[in-house]
Length: 286
Picture 1: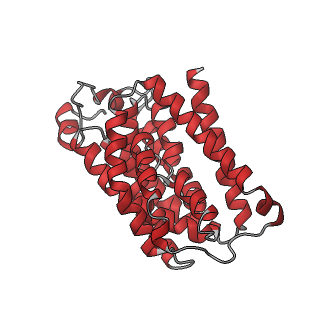
Picture 2: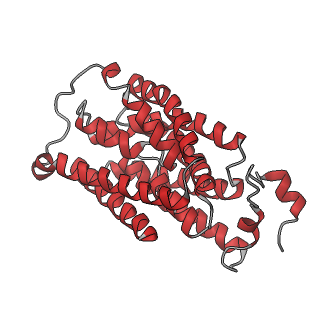
């Protein structure tokens, strides 16, 4: 039995200022039963949560393509919905990391706060960007991050040497938060694909510490991003809740799994996943 139109209006953001009808995302997912789609979204969130917490990202780089390709959301709605999941993952994973390898709290908070103006700018840019342009920019950005991470850390990947003596004070690296916020709000990816590689390469944090610090920054900046996208009715609430439920559970599994992995394996996983996702987005355009 389907949900009544009144109940949908009561519990979700139905229409954007542009008149997009969100009921199509409740009633019609390629003619599949609604509950199957919600279950699929829940399972997708579980897998995303595991991967995201292991490599220290919010998971949006996987969630946004899923929401666009499987759930047929437009870029603005896919990004807004993804950011709910990303922020929830950030909070959940940060709490889990506090029990083990403690993140650099001052650095994480400062990155998140510095991201706020970047979040606003990213939202404004996305509102003026065509869908095909968005997909192309998303794919190219992810490929660039993956290649940079792999080539920039080639020597240490070969030797397995990570971490070592950290360099610089936390406030030296805080301005990078602006760019993370810009990427986060434009692509719905949380900023972890920027923060984690940066924290490994610049201040030379150990991968697990970098992951925890990145997730704290994601939680802080994501809260502001949710406010912007929610206020402008660009969040599909049911899908966001389904993804979030899965990722919260998956993130706890991922944090435990990360203790059994070597730092170089975490970085290799991050590079490979980002590269594959970027390539997939480009293929949607070409």
